[in-house]
Image 1 (cartoon, rainbow, N blue to C red):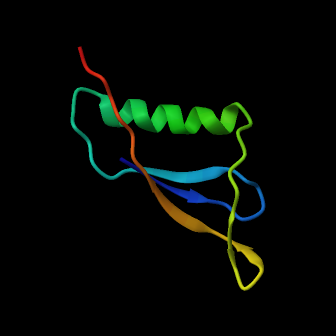
Image 2 (cartoon, rainbow, N blue to C red; image 1 turned 135 degrees about the vertical axis):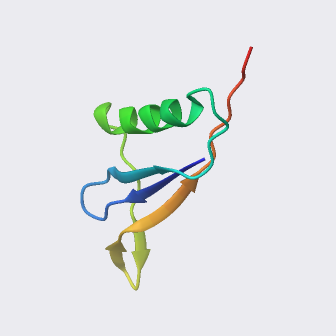
Length: 67
């Protein structure tokens, strides 16, 4: 699992942290993939509180199929 912070004005993910790592480099790979979303221009919808955009911490579950 990755924990991310969604910035309020930039629509990007920042402060990517590994919450749970199963080992074998899977944690680093999930962090790399989430970081790639920013590079590809994927926009995240910021959280709102009282009508204003705010930073939100989000835990993103990541599934791996190991062979």
